[in-house]
Image (cartoon, rainbow, N blue to C red; front, top):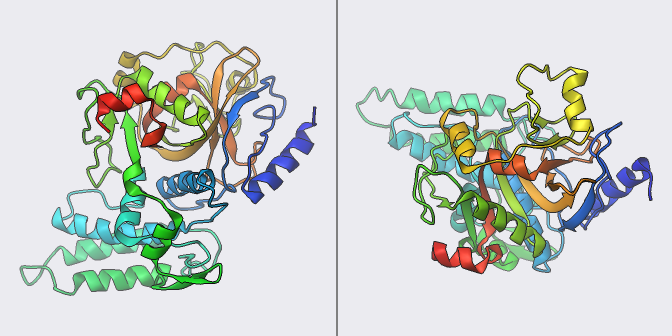
Length: 389
């Protein structure tokens, strides 16, 4: 067996090459958890969204990069900021039509990436970095986000009784001042493409991807508008019972697909420093997140709660489950007690003990998932038939 140090180095090299990697056997220094992979699927290198609320794009682009690897296209680094820039254009129009009474921010959902590809195409990162305002290699969108929203709010005051006919061009000019004008054509591997022809070359079919969730305040096996702030486009994921949500995720992973995962991470059950999320039976309510007692939960295998549909619904309705973060589930692993965990690729850089990955227990997934995105072909046939897709 390799030492943890050797495993980490190997993991980092393999991830950089965009091939399957054996993750460290455990989640944190001094942890007694020992994980054995059941299934691990290909993923590209871990990225860093830095000071931007664009996890929805980073995770979905990573999911699509894995799709391209599964399809035999190789490791391709897609431009997150090309999608983000185009979504700002659509968000601005949406915000103005609602006269400012809707969300305008960096956040979004997986379907935004799919919709952007459908309308605008896609480009590789080598064609559009989208970061000229900072001069850095990592995004920092804090100033841009505030300036763009203020600009729209000022224009909504409409001193002439209507919007200035040039408002959109003015907005686009400001946006491109921050992010740069995207290319209309570019060269990739010696051939010339535009964003639409590159999407066609990649073979990504937007109609292949669907979002799934599980709540009881809407009928099962039908789509509904998920009531979360970042669903500004009012997209409709399919609603399934909790056991089907679990079955869809496991079926996808076991058959070579990955899963885009939207979840609540503002929980004591989620420990970034320990690279783990779980739902222990022990009460964590009075534990300080900086205490040895708290860390012990993530360092020593513990019994976990059994998650029910009712628990999940109550947490959503009382707002203790919120739509915080998007990540990519790449595989299934088990600890030494046989408990199921998912290996999850994050977008907070690769400097963590697990090289930018974390371990998420099945109970946490069932409890705190807001939605997932999968290739529709990864859904078990019986569930797909009930959904009519």
